[in-house]
Image 1 (cartoon, rainbow, N blue to C red):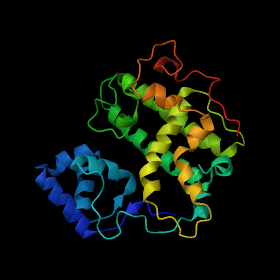
Image 2 (tube, one colour):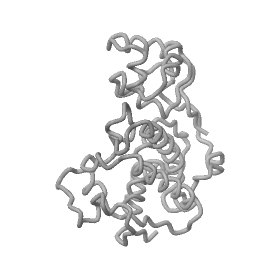
Image 3 (tube, rainbow, N blue to C red):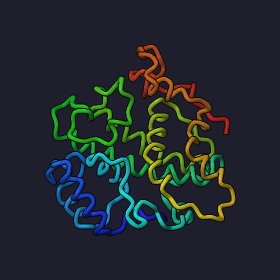
Image 4 (cartoon, rainbow, N blue to C red):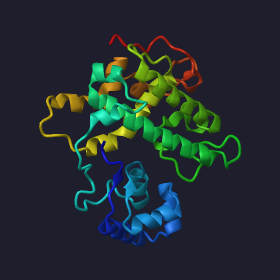
Amino acid sequence: MPAKVIENSVELGNAIKCRRNILDLTIEEAALRAGIGTKTWSRYESGESIRRDKVRGLCKALGWTALPEVGNNNIINVEMSFDEYRNNEAWSPYIEKHFGKYAALSFVIGSEILLDEVNDDLAALSEKPRGTHIGEIPFSLIAPLMPEQFLMRYDYEFMWALRRTLIGLRRIVPHTNDFRAHSVIEELVLYLILEEAQPLMEEMKIPENIDDEDEYTDWKGWIYDMFDDMDLITCLYSNMFMLTPNEIYHFENWFKEQSYISNDG
């Protein structure tokens, strides 16, 4: 399967240390911004491998849009072994059949990263007073991905419910032949999965002899094909209007079963 780490590179470690010094940050300050421990940051600066799901936080801490190109470290330089991914508990034959194997791969990758980040936020919130939301903890990779209108609602109880929904989808989707999202929270979780998968999917080295290039590019929008609309984006991310409690996409209705989300497969 594609490497989940950026391999050891003293040159990259030196670049990280140099950038931190330019920003006049201590290791503690930089690690806090990145949402990782100080020992982990120190290992990065010494040139040890970096987990790819930590790259976004690292780049944000250093004000980079991406890691600098050092050798081949910005590329997952192995061909994908779908046989190994198909053994993952979250691999979905349904998604593969209807939207392609790269879409199924994005579900596996994105859901694993999202689960890690939700667990990180839950751990941080558990140390704060009740009612604290993810915008108030020192660092959250999920907060920037959530609809802004309801930021103050994303407290420990909500994040626990979001985690429960995510785990539920990882259990259900691989074993169904006709998946349908039944609530806004399920639709939102699928959107977050796609967002989390994007950096890794875009960095992968795709075999040159791929049979159908469109099958790879189609992974970027498979959830919208599944839902047959872009209402999630229009209502929750466009900032075109303020949602009221009687509207489906208002936070008060996220966990209610809806009939508007369907898939004719």
